[in-house]
Length: 386
Image: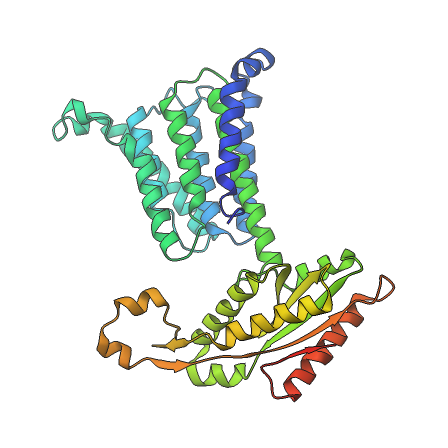
């Protein structure tokens, strides 16, 4: 959760640095220097190119939107003579386009079309100006669109959050910062610094997502095999490695479907993540790994057996090729409940302890694998210490 909420911390740091340090920046930067005003453009272009390279279309479209709108917040890029938008126009453009961010793959064709779509809106707003509201909205309500900037991206993010996704926090944070840029008439270089901060937040978000794609398992959210290999390079002397395998997983997949199998893997990962004193990894397929540091063999065995029992006693209900969660069960009709299939899963666990720094971790993993094999030979659903 800390990683998912990190854009909020980044945004807070940028706002504090700009607001508190604005007098210092004014003293040490040459006013209205084109080189400084172009810094956000360079960083945004870098963010868009990196997002495109790492297959992150959402950030590619978001970065292009910021890049197209940036010249309207500074007065030194040479467009103010031909194009000029009111504050209200910018509020509406930012709010609506954050809501409309495309979900399509960020091919060069779609990115070009997105830029064209943004420019077409700007030209339309330039022609209509804000006078088009005069006939339908009283002057006293003319500031209502200010709320759109925060509410619309927040609505979209809230929807995704209810679906278990948190990737739409970035437009919420950047939308709040843009609202501050529009609302507060900051002297130079306030707007430039805020946009520079937003550009770097976007770039950090791109690299953070790229790190997750490389080192985290996309299905379960656990650290992936590559992370485990890196962590084992310097893991210390007193280490226990436990290998966990979901029993008869292939038969479960064949009987209930691959979607249900994926739900089971996510459920097991959730259980592993809650094991105290250990770090969980997705090893591959239906296999997982727990790494204990500074624990005795007795403590590890008790922990693994408690984990085994918690999974064994977990009631699973299957409907339409997926697991039914408890909150869904409360909302189901009795007729639908009677059609649910009841099942359960078990896991086999094998553990091995490192015998000093001289022993290679590859040997420890091999012994843990052998212990896991013995657990399967013993009838599965048990713990074997190697």
